[in-house]
Image (cartoon, rainbow, N blue to C red):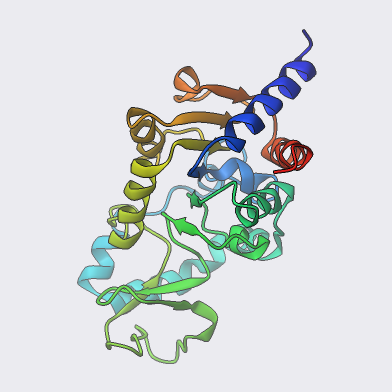
Length: 261
């Protein structure tokens, strides 16, 4: 059987599993964003490969002196200008739109994304947990409230929450920073109640995100992996689709529509 036929058969099988599932959750990684032209952090052309990894003391600095952290962040922004421009120029791809369509038709309950690019929301998905934050938001360190970065005045550094007066920080989770409690709680909830977990474009090596499909599997959920390469989850996946998410997900949606579901 050719590789193309193997992929087509896996897509048909995946659609059938999705169609009979009650609660489907998805874990999405950088592979989906890469299809929109956003560089990954690691790898030959990764942002961190070119410019070095961010300092590991950022979270410590913010807690010690939020003003100094904001000043350093604004000063260092130019270093990552190419990455920032790629984020700003990126558009949702066919995979993002397929996930949004699956949600709209009741085939997908929730997306857990490791990406900070806001593309799921822009594609129309509504039930999203951004476990590593969102580059276009700020988060209050006191009340946990979020707002669009574009609406926040930086005339005063550090900016303050208009609800409680707490310090604001970019919503993106830094090295050493705990995952926000509301995001982590929702991820654990999804892992507990899902009867099917889609694992899309992630190498499954970054924790705690990589744990959620494993937890779901332990609770009896099936796993469908969509990735071009083998990952740490391949051996426990029930269906493996070796294709780009931007190709596989629309094909799954087409299969679901063909079933009249």
